[in-house]
Every structure is written in C-alpha cells, then in structure tokens.
Length: 142
Image (cartoon, rainbow, N blue to C red):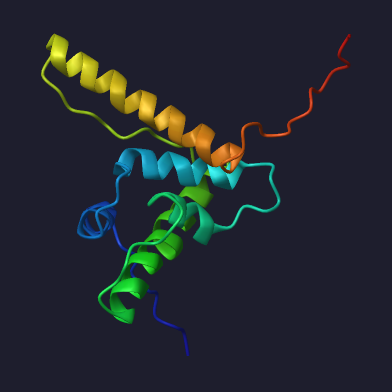
C-alpha cells in the first residue's frame, strides 16, 4: 500500500510562522542563510543551529509543543529540504522577486533586499565563523 505524500508548507505559511514567532530576519534572507548553510564546507553545520541563529542563537519561546513542531517542521522539513534541492544544477536557485514601482526609494529597497540575501548566504556558508576555511585550488606564493 502506497504511503500518502505529506503536503509541505508553502512560502505563505512559512512567512506567517516566522512573523508569528517574531523572527528578526526577513524571509528572503532566511532562504539564503539556509542555502549557504547547505553549501557550507563546514561538516558541523546543523539545521537546528542554523535555525536558532535566525533568532540570535536561541529558538523563540513556544506556547505549546504543537507550535514548536509546526515552526520547526516548516523550516526543516519544508524550507531546508526545498533549499537542498538547489544542489542539483538542474534546479537553479532564484532570488525572491521584488515587485516595485520604478522610484529612487524602491531602488534603494531593492538593493537592501539583495544585499541581505547575499549577507544571509555568506552567514550560512561560513556557519557563523569569521572565515570558511576554504583552500585555494592553486598554489599560493608567500
């Protein structure tokens, strides 16, 4: 007998859960932090630590175990796994669309969003460290 597929939460649900739990990091940056962590060469990257880091290193307080399971399930089983799919070159990552009217203020907001996405990726890639410990693929001269 085939097992029924579990429906994973979509963007709207995850955004609502992040807002409900006062996540200080925007959804666009959450996505790139997870993507960076998945791409990290650090073997000690743990999804739960990356998720706790969204709130400054500690998960938010939950009203119930159901609330905790809902948020963590959405972020780990939903968003983390969705971002993991981008390891396949046939599944390219797409930045969040930022629909804006063409004004100077909106151009600044667009730049801020893209900057936060890039910072999020680097934060995830470095796993909170000051450097990623990557070695150059060529000999270096001293």
